[in-house]
Image (cartoon, rainbow over all chains, first blue to last red; front, top):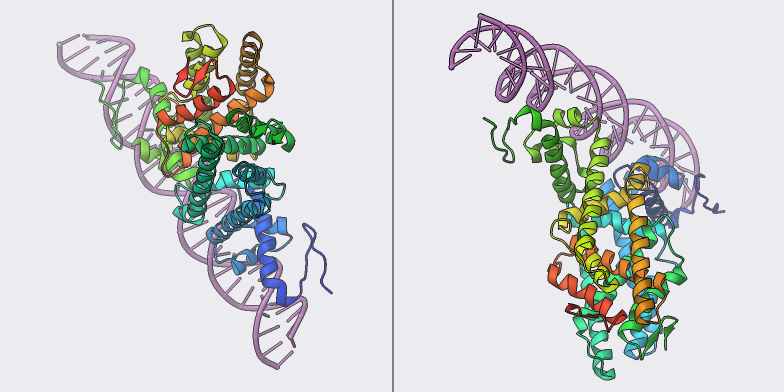
Amino acid sequence: MPKVATSAKVIHLPRKASRELRKQQLIDATIETLARKGYAALTLTDVAVEAGLSHGLVNFHFQSKEKLFSETLQFLATEYQQNWQDYLGRAAHSPAARIDALIRADLDPKICTAAKLRCWTAFWSESQSRPIYQKEYGGNDDAYNALLTDTCAELITTAGYAHEPLQVSRMIRALGDGVWQDLAFSETPCPRREALQTLHLGLASLFPRHFTVKGLV
Amino acid sequence: MPKVATSAKVIHLPRKASRELRKQQLIDATIETLARKGYAALTLTDVAVEAGLSHGLVNFHFQSKEKLFSETLQFLATEYQQNWQDYLGRAAHSPAARIDALIRADLDPKICTAAKLRCWTAFWSESQSRPIYQKEYGGNDDAYNALLTDTCAELITTAGYAHEPLQVSRMIRALGDGVWQDLAFSETPCPRREALQTLHLGLASLFPRHFTVKGLV
DNA sequence: TGATATTGACTGACAAGTCAATCAAAATAA
DNA sequence: TTATTTTGATTGACTTGTCAGTCAATATCA
């Protein structure tokens, strides 16, 4: 019978499933440890202890520390992209509703945890010296930006606002990144509800006929 | 005769001035190296090479790597605070002019370089495990936030806007942080002029009678 | 002014410690 | 048994911090 996983306990999983589950378990442990200790102070032993395993396993499943990080980033990037695409799929078709979906997606509890946000920052600040990380994520970002800009352009044109689409989408992205930073590093981060209000205040100011501070009209 | 300093050359300075100049030289080298290599990969030898000195000297002037980082952060924090206080001192007394001064200060070429912004991020993402860094900077941040919120409240009250001061100041800060992030990590960061426009677009949306995308009315 | 003594910034080799990666042996499942 | 996963001791590379010695800049003296 498969034993249930709890942090800092030895776990034995059915062999067939083991490989993928172990890798995910180690990736989860990497995210937690990275958030708690930062990039510089993190050792493979830390990750292994967090996962309740021995450090040799990390190099068994991933071939190197670098590859562990690379796959962790890839996991976060995929999860992020998947998330906003899901939100978009469930949103109404109007441009305002799609913009609302995109900013709500960024605050989804699944991806917007302090730990994961700190991981993003850790990867960004190390990305200068490790081009791998840029490749891992760069592409998705461009797709997201293009989509946001197009949707803003659509709203501006159809509803007759006088904004420049590129400027507006830049501002929305900056707002989102800024809110994320507060959630990640502020000693007293504002609750998710207030973070969403901050984003909606920006949208309400830009598009007063389509948004209020409470959200989509 | 004192020899002139150039990177990667041994230099002998007049002794009286040497201590402070060397420390600053090493702090500058730390900022450059931190931005180029990130926190994890940075060694004392890297910093020394960047400064054109031997690594033993780093521990001679600073007592440890930790202290080098701590003083580097302190330098950045002081420079940042000094800068916005200068801008505020030169600004007109109206609340709108003061808000404009604060956001222009954040984009001053002296403090808003890609290297320095990347350093801030590096320190933030390591701050979890090193409480020293929080202490070094936490206080100034509170003062800045309080000032911004008060100034927003003043503008809102005197000009009869219908915003909530705390929400507005949160949004302005988030915008500023988001723009900084773009300048620090985007592969194609927008020029400073466009970054300023993004911030002014936010202010123009919030306070249309006091700001346009071009700036203060 | 020129010669000598003193100071203290600076170097580079080295000791001590840390960590990623390896691998042989053990445990476990098929 | 055979195949696979897991462990943990070991290795080798690398980094920080130290320290004895060097040498330029200054102070002192003739």
